[in-house]
Length: 128
Image (cartoon, rainbow, N blue to C red; front, side, top):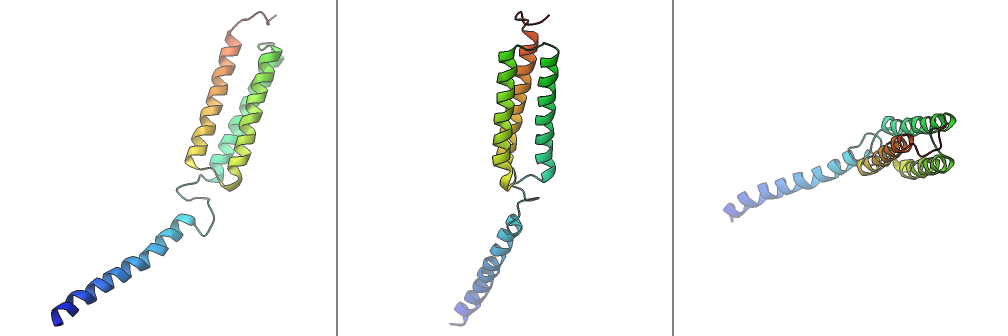
């Protein structure tokens, strides 16, 4: 009986210590319900970076349209794509951007940038 007690008590203490540590670890991940700063969500600075990239891309499209580097159809398509990304960003940013959402938005912005470069360089008889 004594041998069983010597084995059982340390096992129970270890189990209690492990069970007590679990809620603390979960609380650290959630940050009491706030997502800012947690490993799964980006800070507001990352959201502001996406917003700034969208604004800069919009300015570039407008500038190229004023310079007659884009046809009306190309201009409308690029503006539509930017508005679509902006809407997706606003929906995703309600609870903070996850790393997947951030990568998807960045990839879509990069695709629009590439499309703008391609449309500028195509020389399809819409320039003066």
